[in-house]
Amino acid sequence: MSDGKKPEWADKHYSFFTNRECEYFPCHQGIEPEAFNCLFCYCPLYALGENCGGGFRMMENGVKDCSGCTLPHRRENYGVITEKFQQIVDTFRKK
Image 1 (cartoon, one colour):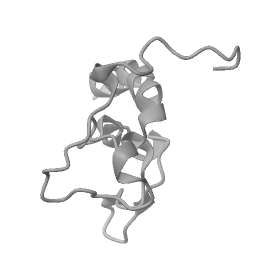
Image 2: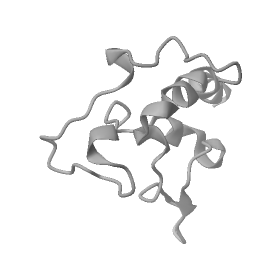
Image 3: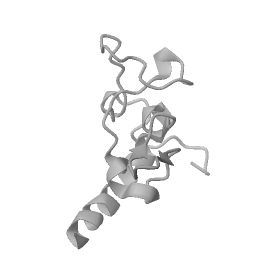
Image 4: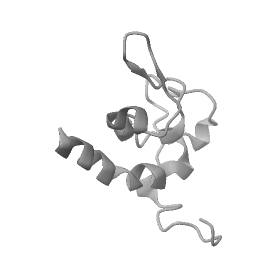
């Protein structure tokens, strides 16, 4: 946050957990295991397609490949994800 204050969800248990017992842990490289957030294992931003804001690539067959994206797995991005929930709802309302 720009004022130096932590968001209200920072350091709360509901905003972060790590599942070290998962057969795929860690499923993305580039994050230290103790900082790896498994809360959004199936990223809700996937539904936003190219507007998700993550580091994805589109494969030749049109499938979105998120294997290089760490956005939902970083502790500090809980707010980034939850702030987009209304955008996700709006996307589905339009369809």
